[in-house]
Amino acid sequence: MRLIVFLFIIIGFTVSAQKSNPEITVKELKENIGYLASDELKGRKSGEPGELMAAEYIRDKFKNAGLELLFDNGFQNFGLVTSAEIGAGNKLIVNGTDFEVEKSFLPYAFSANTTVSAGVVFAGYGLKVNRDTLQWDDYKGVDVNGKWVLVLQGDPDLENAQSPFIEFSSERSKALNAADNNAAGLILVAGKKFREKDELASLVFDKNSARYAIPIIEVTREVANKILGGKTTIEVLETEIDSLQKTIGLKTDATVSATTNAIQKEAETRNVVALLQGNDKNLKNEYIVVGAHFDHLGMGGPGSGSRATDTVAVHNGADDNASGVATIIQLAEKLAAEKSNKRSIIFATFSAEEMGLVGSKAFVNKPPVETEKMVAMFNFDMVGRLDKTTNALSIGGSQTSKESEKLMTDLNTGFELAFAPEGVGPSDHASFYLQNIPVFFVSTGAHPDYHTPNDDAEFINYEGTKK
Image (cartoon, rainbow, N blue to C red; front, top):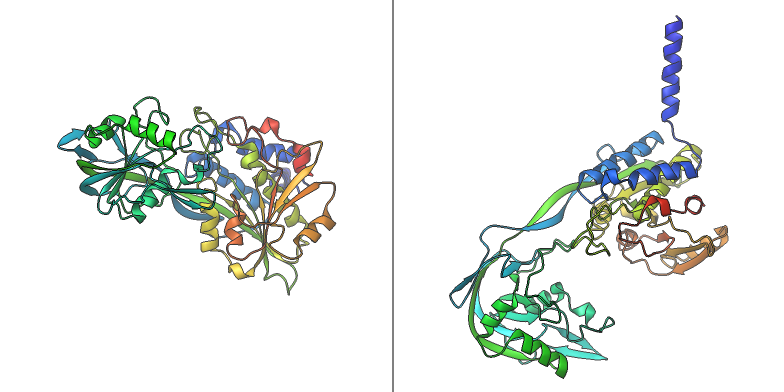
């Protein structure tokens, strides 16, 4: 009998120990952020083991809080492209001379996988800009129809950090211009100003899985100069265009035959989603989404989005966005214990935000309830660095509903609120705003450690996060 009583005591203790603490505490925030931003999770890159461990941790917190797990036991699974690699059969032949892949040329991750043989036209930087203050068209008077177009990387104002060409000079923008002008393919080459050494960049996946319908390759200056056939050189053309601030178009006598094969690598990842039912018979069929993304940049490196471009190290993402996820967990525990919510609340943590809002897009494309029933979405992204002096809190989407700014002003308890009216932006609330849902994007703002290996748990303002 004593043994049975003892077992019941132990069982009762174990069950109660697993229950969530309804109060929001610094201790629990440190535990939440400390785990999510630990080296063990290796930066929570989408589709990698550390991120899946984070998802299981969040799901268990939701379950222990007493929430109803949605989708597949709390997981909304979806696929995404996470990287790219060189496939078999890449070839480049210029006037009968073969060149070696990775040494003399590379396909881009967003290139079409195909074979094209055609003549070549040089078209400056491959830019098309039509603005009142800036007019530039490298395709004017140049017929690239059915031909390869050879263009310089960068722009004609490269040394100016505020160059007006910057937003038009990405490789994707140049690929779009080439395709729009019916080019058969695009060849990019780095001039000496763009890259001193005559070498290729590595094959970088830019977190966008969309491909173009034409082949797109990068070549060395050695290859490009062979295409130019001795008429001039890439070095001379770059210097002339930049000094004259005038485009140069040039038809070559070269024939280029290329086969491109860049393989995009896919992985499966997941959102974590749970529900707290509303308790008002008239309002429980309206839903508020409370969300945050839990992925980050992994180990950094080229194409990851890291601002420490030359550093491969764990990007723990304590503020971005373990802080937002910890906020969701604490709110879920508190609200589930209080059960005072009239409307139903969907708690959602999203994967692949850093890959282009992929997780939140997957959520609104296949939502657990109709998006028409979602009356608001709160997005917490980087809420761990509240300034102790200013108490400044940024809230985006403040004019996506008529009542927002007055409500927030009336409810404010000591923050210096900075409103931004727009519902679009580089975080998951944008996916909901595009479904005509009012949004609140809450953040304590950017800082020098953003997207670097220094975004660590030790720098979080835990009292500020609790507040």
